Image (cartoon, rainbow, N blue to C red; front, side):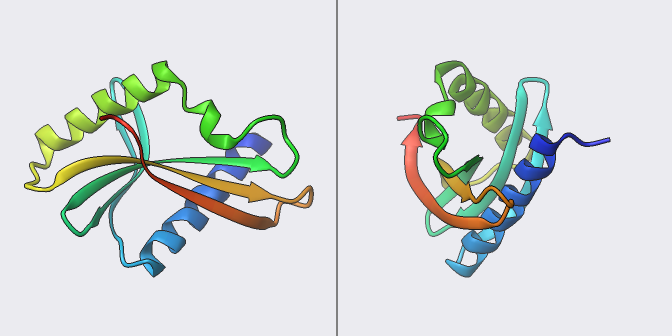
Length: 121
């Protein structure tokens, strides 16, 4: 049985994937797992292979969703991306984005913010 947080997270990931596709991204994988962790969305855009961490939060919560992607989480995402690239070699340059999804108390999406190249340089 999924928790409310898991359900909200999956809804945010689906919303982010739709937004990215509408912006011209080609989704390669969702919820990719390695021994280091999980990447929510892997996509191609121009010269980049983009590893996207989606963070969904209710409007008015303390801090921004991106602030939850701390140094330890970033390291796990980098290691997981390396695993993906070993299994799926790409001539594209890796980029790490954070996609923030904001929700109302009823769970409906009220907005989003796509932070390109959020970390990993």
